[in-house]
Amino acid sequence: MPEKLRATNFDELDRRIVVATQEGLPLCPRPYHALAERLGTSAAEIMSRLEAMVADGTIRRLGAIPNHYALGYRANGMSVWDIHDNELQTAGTTVGALDFVTHCYHRPRRPPAWPYNLFAMVHGANRGEVEEKVAQIADILKHSAGAHDVLYSTAILKKTGLRITA
Image (cartoon, rainbow, N blue to C red; front, side, top):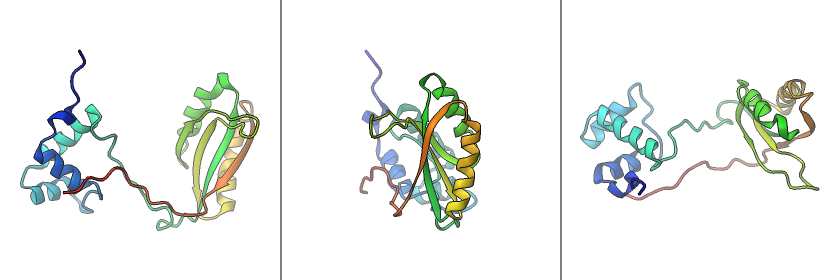
């Protein structure tokens, strides 16, 4: 029988850690120490519990969620690519490793209207910068890709996960 997820043993400190971190870690040089002081425990305990929650799937991941507009990136383009199926894994790994691609993933095609199966998000100060970066991707994928396009963001969406109350 599979081991039960840690979530079944979720105690009061785990809950307080999740509630305290769901809006983000404190913006200071030692965020886990600041959080530990606020919750009355040690930074090592905070880090250990968060590591365990990630490892067992209680929480999916810890990561920064930047506001691209606040950082000066006004153009956000999801480049979409029609990649030959036998080259998809290699193409995705290559494109995902580019320093200007923030996320890259495979999605199924929906023919005849949607031939694209590889998605790669590119940000730039303006659309011209995004198009230059997409042209670099096109050069890399010239032997693996058919058609491609760029879909530009028209609104800022709030990026949050599931929230629990205190």
